[in-house]
Amino acid sequence: MNRYLSDVLMQPESVRKALAFYEAEGYVEKMNELRKIRFDKVVFAGMGSSHYCNFGAAIHLSSKGINAVAKSAGEILHYDRNSITETTLLVLVSQSGESGEVVKFLETLPKSARVVAITNEATSTLGKRGDPTFLLHVASEESVSTRTYLTSWILSGLVARALAGDLDARYLAQIREGVDLLEKLVKSHEEIGAKLKAFMPNQRYICYLGRGHSYSTVFGGALFTSELAKYPAMGFDAGEFRHGPFEMVDESYGAMVFAPDGASWDSNVRMAADIASHGGKAILVTNRRPAGESKNLLVIEYGRIDEAFTPLIDIAAAELFANMVAESKGIEIGKFRWGSKVTTVI
Image (cartoon, rainbow, N blue to C red; front, side, top):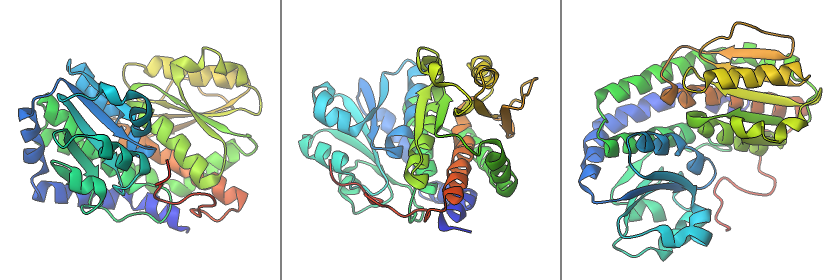
């Protein structure tokens, strides 16, 4: 078993240990203190998976009527710096705390700017700037993010719910339910890997499609697949995909469609079925099995849980696909050719 796959399979155990640390350190109580801060906008920012992990947090705050966005730290640094005001609450995420754009952005901020930091390194540039700083408290991976991504997603969500006034023990209990479902899914990794290899042996690339809370998985999955397997992977809003990119679909086309039971389940299932009916291969990742299947449609199903928590689980499908492709290509899994685990060049 390669190191990356081992990291994937160890995610449930790592997350449980991190959750125990958060409870011991009183993270819920500390985060609930954030509501005392005066702010008129919340900006979640990071780079790569530390950007994508924030989509669900921003969606939750927006659903509560709170002005919130999740943006690339580089986009803010170069083009949107003037949108950050004295009453903007910044939630910056960087696993290393040294990502180039995050560090440069911090240099432009006045000391009065309020920064909530989410990082794995307390003594990093971001870790020292945070007020407060919340540590992921997981072992760093050798290659592509797995547990650091999941714990970043969890902490971002905890901050959002604290700011919305609905962070309590029940939320942590739902996280644990999600971890249990993740564990069941990754325990079937050999069966899932074999099905993926048999189902999609010759596709030239893969598109990850989803909406809403699934954005984290869509764009994180595309990043991990490109990075790990050196294989073309693209992330699309599933609705936007119909507005032009659907023309890519033919017998060489492959997609993974994320369809959690929720607001857009019908539309996402229809998308997977339409891709299959036009000759493409569609992997449908869902917690609610659709009625019909076809030779061009493969369903990966996991247990029922609220849509907001599904990114904790369905990322494993993208991780296992990336591992399958890398092994099939015979590449050295997890080895960087042109970059490194921490990107400091902007």
